Image (spheres, rainbow, N blue to C red):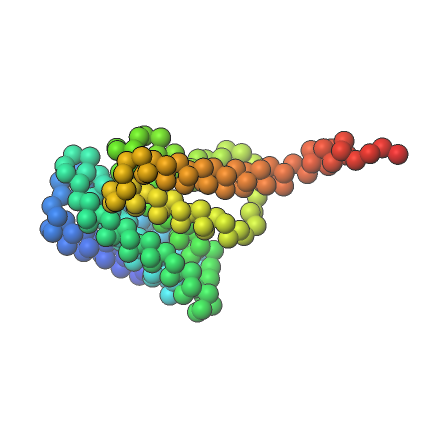
Length: 244
């Protein structure tokens, strides 16, 4: 069995290549360069581990699309970190994020049409989406308020709950509404990043997106709690039923 899968390795070199090209075009500081390189290396290591754990030898067709999106996310991460010290390259950030969001709707279709859906691919896609939202939240928080970090941090708070709480480790049923909510977060964050709306309109848009996110995650948490506490659920139903 090969210890090194070619997919993540190719993805790392692709990320570094795009990073160099964008960095040369817009200019980046040392911290941003370090962030971009670190992102590429850590991503490769995590994907190598994910493929190995899944028993896969390499990427499927849809995984290559997600890998391309991850390449863009790595560069966006470097640019956002650079914006903490220098004038932000808003045009580059918005352009890269828009392409990444458009590709988000491609990988799932490719997986279904080629019959190559996998748990690894679904997790790869989800984590790429989550990290992009976290990075955009960090950028937007500087102008809209640090509460916006809750949008990007919600997924990771949910993961923390899974790691620390046994009943949250159940399997959630598929729900299309999650995809709608995730897309809403991306639209709200990139709209605010682009600055095409007045400040108050951006805040309202972000608040609506955050409310939808709380509703979606809240529904999942309630479902997991009920599924993990069947005895309690039976007792509650028993109290509601009339006694003969």
